[in-house]
Length: 518
Image 1 (cartoon, one colour):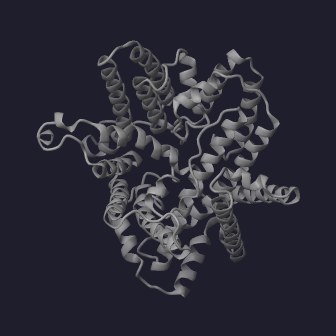
Image 2 (cartoon, helix red, strand yellow):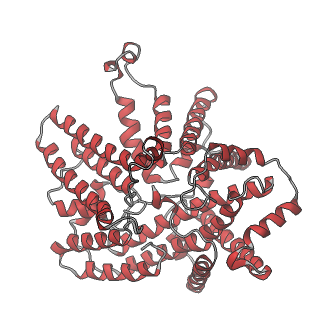
Image 3 (spheres, one colour):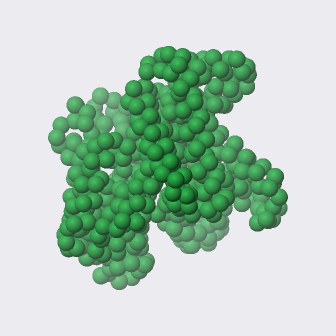
């Protein structure tokens, strides 16, 4: 069951009705039951995994929740320095758990082929682990009291709106909402439906068709010319953005339908003029989490107690801390070398930017339009170069179980200068689309027209949000339209979503969400 499946369209209203009609004391239990059912529906379904393996992810999620509840109570009751030690123990246990599921399957074929079985990857383990860590640290810092109800904390970590791929919510903002009574509100429901429609449009009408093209080209890197490889890179970049932003909008809509407010995860990142601004707009919940729970502790850490290093420095350089944050983000995304290189590139971008600001001075807030657009273009180009490694780490274009590496990423970068011919590009692009469901020239032409229209509409929405609405909620763009225009847009969004779903089920569409496997 995924946000863009018909099963979720049936599940969400039913869950909302049961939750909003339930008595206040029962609402957290209803939310937890709905979330566990959603999690069970997304369990590993491989024939080789028995019921025990299928129950493992859910059992693990509940065990982590109860562990954090008990430890949080112990942290609150403890004094210093025992409180700090308990937080450290909890964080280390959670990180060890995450490392096992992130990297165990990577090392099995290397060290014990045919001896150990691969572990099923629990849905959302990275996201609920980070949420659990933030809860323990916040209790340890005194930023929030420990949660008294294990049911509330479990409902927070299991919430079906965020368990798949975030956003990474903070307990100090969501837990108080779970203690409140929530009832049906017409205006809130309309906003939720608008957000869900926009998110679904971005996913099925924009992201999945773009992925279709990128996967076909990346499936045969040596056989495509430079323009096709460049177009596939751009398609993948926009696919990842519209896929994840669309998911985040549907997650916010799902929560809002229940009366819950979760954070925005994207704010027109491709209009950022530097990488600092970019990461303040891209995957905001992860960026802010790394800022609060990795960068800040590193900056304030007492390095003098470390062996060898402590003899020369007492504090880590902020630039070193910035480098560590983005380098670690690469490991978080995946265990393969392309993700490590991607994280390294993000670290170099941010550190290089800080060094430029240090020697040349920070840029002026009000600069000529041509300067701002030149900066936006520079950020976009560098981001696309890093996306080549991200795509290869995600095995785009490979069959199930396949894996690309750094070599293929560099093959794409080298291939940008190969066979620069518009006629070759047109022929290769046509052939990339003309497979399976699209094996007809009229269908190929319809595909290109549909993608161009939906892509232009999605970019226009981002443009309006960035420059006319100052990055406020994108549902405001719809609300600001005249009634006739707004209803025409509703019908158009519905039609495009329907067409996108038909194309996905009949052709070679993307399907699941990109960040569902992280």
